[in-house]
Length: 208
Image (cartoon, rainbow, N blue to C red):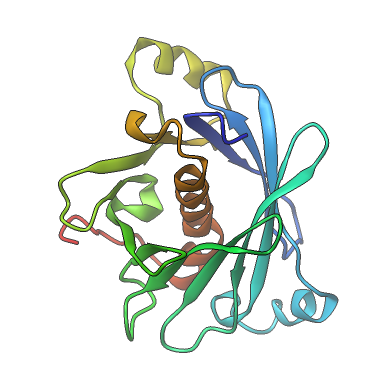
């Protein structure tokens, strides 16, 4: 999965389900390369119907096809003022984490690696799925998320993929860095699964 440089992510639409799941495809070929599924306990599933999801803990397992081997997990505990979301590899070792801004549930988040070094922040409209991951100084683009890949090939693939897809395109400089790709893919999924639930509307991060 982490050999890909472009990922297409599609949410499974389920009626009367409190659990989210996604297909992850190679954005260039359309091949199914993985899945992302929330793994939460029965009590949490029940409480989600009466307590806002934004305050609830969650774990998302990302697995590689065809054998469904675990690649990494995304974990968020109970929400209290500031959300910390951890990314752990298949052995449970910390890869990095995301922190939302202090005293806000709608102001975006920052990405750190396992050594607490600043890795990236989001610029753009997260909830319109048109945003970029930039270095701390904003000068280097690490990845871009959008509803289309771009270019003639991207337009052709718009027909191939469903309208619900969005794409993560990783910067060429990170092509041989699987841990960096893991953080970017995890952050992209976290926007949809976690941070979208923490905001009731589109958030413009163009000034971040």
